[in-house]
Image (cartoon, rainbow, N blue to C red):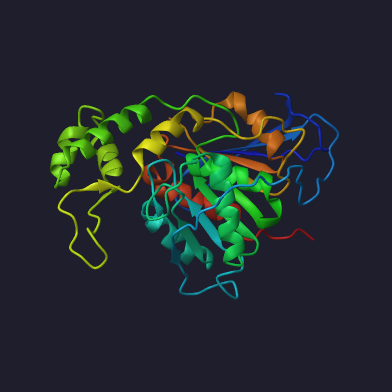
Length: 346
């Protein structure tokens, strides 16, 4: 079952939800997939006003950006004139890569007729490494990617770490973004789960052992993570680098991620660069998708989401933190409902 809570609060700049939601209406509808959803409408208790379509109160930081590697998923029957118009940029989470979003990207490209760029963030996948790894740097990389490819009216979809990167892009560069979809994360400072530090320890043990097979790597990682699916996800970052250009692959497996850099950045991966929603907000549509079994987006942070993103919708999907892989159909339906053109009332 998938529950949908749609929260929209059109408020003047500086108005705060402050945890006070009113004008609540409930109704039940059925999706094409047969899931039953509850829809809740929120409005701010402050004086309502239509916000401007673009709000920016920040000066973009000076960051040395890196060029992001990507996969392009193009629709067979496009509804846009070219890949630069209304593209979707899919952003993975910590220890993820563009490969994680391959299946859902192909499905959404088909369903929406839009081109999808699945990217590798810095220090992940095939993108370059950099000693700086925080949301400001990641967001500037994405903004540079949008500009360098001449993309217009982009939709950003990000999961976990990628969600905070997408939110940061929207708040810093609202002119580059048409709307965002944040998957199981919120614009708050939160403690990162201790499992990630444990993963780093296990992955470093694998590198030190200079393994030559995935089975050997898995055996080393098992004491650090009992879930086979999670281990397979982490070990998906192993590859055999070539000893020299054009040469044979190395017999030793290595991680694509610079584990030292990622390990040092973990203390900041739970942070969010913006603290005061009265100074900056994104006044365009935003969809927040959270897993019902996840603790990343608790009810108490929903008012803060509304302050940073006053035109937001909140969708609950039956899943844990790995929403897209655990319940891909419910996620797909939520995205389609949000992005498909709405009928204009006469």
